[in-house]
Length: 215
Ligand SMILES: Nc1ccn([C@@H]2O[C@H](COP(=O)(O)OP(=O)(O)OP(=O)(O)O)[C@@H](O)[C@H]2O)c(=O)n1
Ligand SMILES: C[C@](O)(CO)[C@H](O)COP(=O)(O)O
Image (cartoon, rainbow, N blue to C red; front, side, top):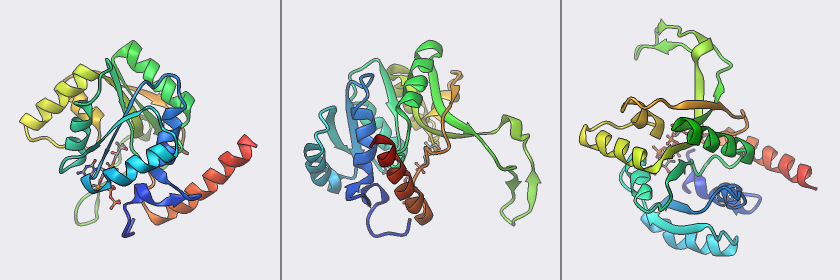
């Protein structure tokens, strides 16, 4: 993002992005409790915002680890439910009905992630910048969060990955490598991961649109 402030704390309509994200889950009857994993130095201000925005389902705010994977694992250790969903703090536009669909699918099949079909042709490119392969687009999906799992299986997958020194870019990868099938549930292209500066402009537009819909 290139900002001094971590992107999850940037303001969208005067509210930190992470609080917009938490509000989606707070309002869902399906969600029992939320554990927020953050930087140790951010716990105090996050706790303040949680009180300010009345997020009663956030039962704990805990410091993360050295990598995303360790942070998720630390979060899992604080969960008391049989099922868990892992979500990126910077995906505030996830639709509650898609969260619900992902969760229900996981309950039926064991594990599920939200995703969208890719629109572009995707190429595998070498370090020197030459195209090496063009995978068949019909089988390619861009994977989002939330990702839903049985808590015991996700914990086990994390422990196995840690023991083998494997680092994945999402939780599904860790579960997949245990041989557990993970179902894909079609979500929405608006469930962006706010990552680069132009995403902030899109996010402001999306928030405005959401506000107009609700009035
Ligand atoms: N110790 C860490 C480091 C990172 N993360 C999370 O892992 C993700 C990826 O972090 P990072 O690799 O720093 O990339 P970006 O967040 O994409 O960084 P940038 O803002 O530079 O795009 C983020 O959701 C971050 O909150 C984490 O939970 N614990
Ligand atoms: C989990 C994820 O959102 C799936 O697309 C993505 O891999 C997270 O990436 P980040 O680098 O941790 O933001």
